[in-house]
Image 1 (cartoon, rainbow, N blue to C red):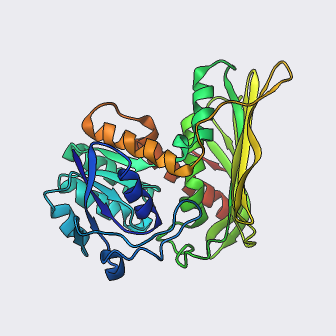
Image 2 (image 1 turned 30 degrees about the horizontal axis):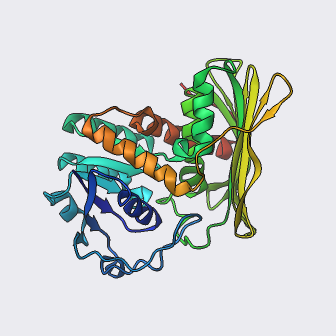
Length: 347
């Protein structure tokens, strides 16, 4: 039985807490939060742009702490699940690893690449697992794309266009603060990670777009890679109109097919703008069979893999700290290109 302590009770803390209830061989035994209201079990003010809202929780069987250090010291915790604000990821992960705990850290891994490196070194020195919660590859459309590309049926990967746009998250008053990360490190880091997973590390990128409060607001990026035949683009960020709360998708080019999809939440209703589709060399538009699309199921797959990693049953590259650290680096390079108004090379 793996015993979990959750640090931070916001929307992602709620999602992870509910997900653990669906899995065998794991039990949430403790949590920490600075909020007295949430330590008392009142989670009714928690909400996000998908999934359930918070409700009243019975925490009587858990060890509940105000201070994170007390969570780290709890002998009934094997794995600490970090759902604190991104600005605390590095500090808290390093404390937990030095305290002998495995760590599952929500994305982004940290706010700075140097912090990511310290986290990796600490995990190696402590002999503990450090997994980073990039859930996107576990969502059915992205899992399908990843498996289709790796399967090789349609030949080599040539390039792709990726998209992720949200309406300004008015329920998050701190969204535009540096310690949260804003659209680049909170939102686009998903696609930076997925692009890195598919193509490898970019060698060059160029970004153009709008800034707000010194942070990327809405932008387009072109990526180049070691394989000069491959080219990827991204468009995304935040728009001020609330009618479309969420939008993501891709069009990925292979030698013998194009795979594409687009999903949006418009007027409170989630729907495909383009269902997952394969355009093959025979002129056909094929509809693959995907697993049920509730995004909460992706967290089940993600956390199940975290538990396998902790148990030594197989390490997943999808949750590894190397890819997660590269995703943070790629986000910073795009911000640099936006600020400087010119392309940036990556060694």
